[in-house]
Image (tube, rainbow over all chains, first blue to last red; front, side, top):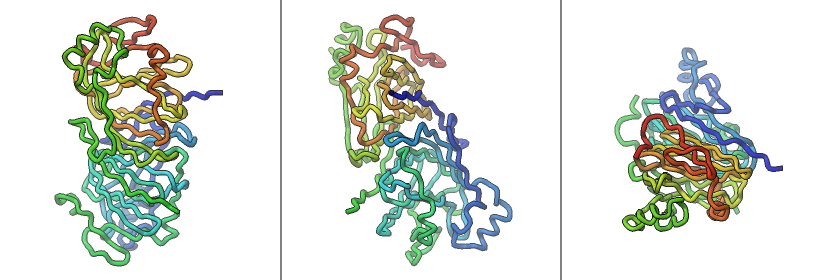
Length: 200
Length: 200
């Protein structure tokens, strides 16, 4: 029997970084991000005052988990740094690694940090109206290198799923993005961002 | 062997209604839309002066046609009317009908007109930041009910394909959107749009 879904209508609220009409909300506080940053003492200092603050959140519309369907939504990240690293998401690869994702800049200045299975690195500058296609098999992480919240919309296959442990198991991505620094191990690449937006 | 794609980076130019970095461009002139509008004489009058003008165009980024991949892009439609019908796309259902689509308002005022296999009609008002999920199996058509170009971004499964003949074969969608009118056969539903934007 043909199962018909009703059309979905949502509103992207760029100011709050949320999707009105979302079916799910996913939140990470700073406390949830233990082990993510290189500078443990700077991380502990932040936790002492902002541990339960929301570091980033996702609100999305998920009609199903069916193969061939899509999930659409909004992600919002706080601006800031821990040591010389910008605030970032834990990053993930899709549980079905051959599933891509589209990120679309709404506000703020960010970098989409991608790492291939061969350890190759790509950094893609995200601003309003930038559309980034994350291909299948690439680990991807969002980094807020600006002074304002980073807000992006996204779309990806509904059966993709997320594997968040892949990076932790690998001892972290091989690249961190810091304000300054040269390519060393682990590499730290300063994103080439026009203007001074990433000077805190 | 693992085939890795490179990440894609595009820029949505809302003013021109185009995707910079697109891999494809698809254009429909008014002359291409013969038979689409009820008022044939009004159509012929328009053709006489604007036949080769672009009625609507699509620029998109298509990494592949693989199942599980996605296509992302921008669509731009001229504003205007032919008889009492607003400019509209031919509309389509996906060649793989169980594939959905996401449309996302960028500029202008439009209506996403959907028709189910059972002939049920849904009209969804599209404005900047409105995110519309077109579910699987629904025929869908964009209608520009505003005074400015209607610009939307979109994302859909790369293996969806399009069947543009389904509507023509059915003698047209059962609904047209006109400035005024009551539900008659074919139904004409005036979209409830705040403000006077659709008075030409």
